[in-house]
Length: 107
Image 1 (cartoon, rainbow, N blue to C red):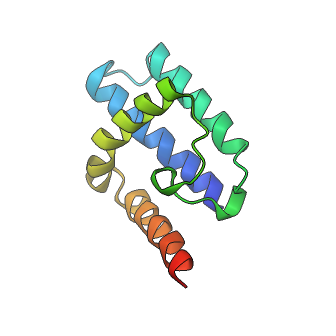
Image 2 (tube, rainbow, N blue to C red; image 1 turned 45 degrees about the horizontal axis):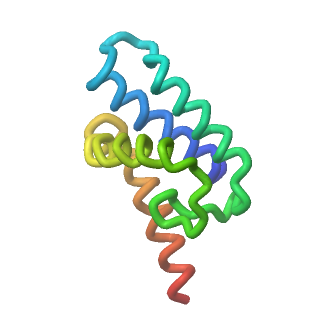
């Protein structure tokens, strides 16, 4: 799985986790979360960094509209810590991806 595919998968897991806890306990996302997921996937697909993309929190380019950025930050703050229990492998990979970029910057 490529770096960009992992990032898309992680964002989707985070949005699903948040929506299930805050909006709908069913399988499907609510319309607001579905809209944000589609927006996030589009932004990731058009990311100028592609495979060398840092994690969103460490990115130098803020490609999200301010309102969408606020929503995704809220979701990531909620879901990030819970990912270690619900999706431990994805959470650890996401942490390593963030540290990897940091290490490259310091080299």
